Length: 564
Ligand code: F6P
Image (cartoon, rainbow, N blue to C red; front, side, top):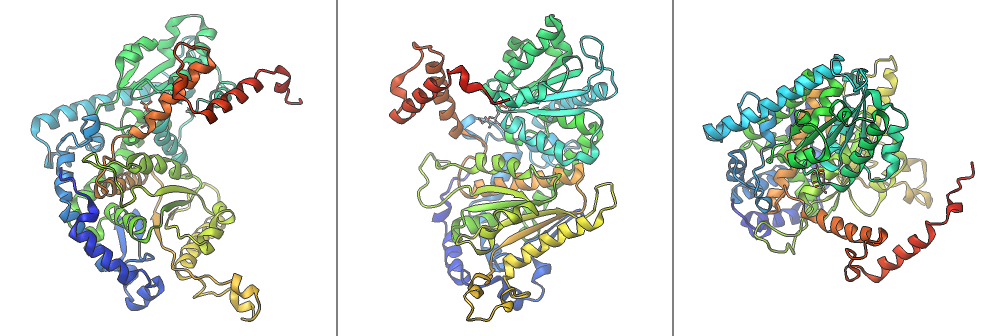
């Protein structure tokens, strides 16, 4: 893999000069200059997903220069390394092959991988898929029974980060495809999370999926133990665990130690990273929620985006993920717009922003480059956040329109109206609102001026000026289906990959989360009075004081009176 500081390339220098030419140009003028702009900056993915990126502060030259950058950095070689199974996740010495999970017909990886390697991976994927299918069907049809003979009706997925956010988001997004099973997600170490679920269900018809690649994650293991005690307290028999616990993990030894039976273990391959794992056995809760056939459609959608990505790799103007990545680098590193917003004008996909936060920020929030050097002169991942439209319009949109910062946005909506009742008008109004926002952000008050109602010497006039020139992408999804959702997820996976590649970082590790875990362990020893393990040299004065305040206060029983 070619490791190169991007800002030292000739192409970056050219982009810097181009930025000087373009930075003061208005989106409105770009449209005036090119009447066909709306067509040129538009990508249609199989008549199912449409990306309009015309409302951006770019011209065709911007894209051409980024193509040069990708060439200079040898991007095609990087993709070849990744898809052929090279260990491009160097700091963890792992291949990155989540694409294999959805390459059921081998049409993608056979272009890159040698036959033996491909065969092994294909077999591993197929065995997992068969197992997912079998368990899904036996639970949905009621063949899988609880220890006392009851059918399973509640599934509780216990996991965090990549073992939670993806499945949780997909299950919520595909509400219209759900069967009768109740699916719950427990992730937080805050005991409120698990107790709120357990208080409303019964052990006799509940199946837990303990989902953790490492089976070492404090939150997950703690919650799994609470669930185990809850089951054992009810049945008074260890054998009940076989009916009520499944593990999804890469750490079989730890799972067995925990007490989950071998036949109930679903193995996550080493080459699947946590935040890229929802298409693997980590998606078991998805398959249970929407059925195995629909789970396969989710995989198909992602696979078709994989194919789109590689087949359009030399036709970047039509490559949806590369365009999103280029835009993100353009704004983050040239305009210095440090935030990016994901705005879903659809309640079903309202968890997409939090899923994408992990995907983008855990992948690309790094300050050490691929050669081990500190990155000094450019920023890596932008800050990702988001919300649902129209609610967000009544909260933070003021800043989007008139704030001193500019925040590029991705607006995402569904075209078809799929709510099963006849309130079409609400859907049209929702979409009108979204279009209104993208228009106003880009063109300000050019087309419909609010300020006209004021005379220009009225001081309120100033407050009603909308300068616009604020960029956004619009993604229209014909219908939110397992297929299109799979494609959208893969779209953003590639966006992150391309961006991380340009930044010369390792997008597939996450060392930055380790320190907090170690410090928490040390503090925990203090609380637990495991003094021998507690090291007071590893703690600062302020934190020590906070611990003391906490410790002195939380002991008084009368303070736990909630006034009921
Ligand atoms: O702490 C971060 C992290 O390692 C994520 O990368 C991962 O998705 C999450 O924790 C959960 O990890 P695991 O699946 O091993 O429990």
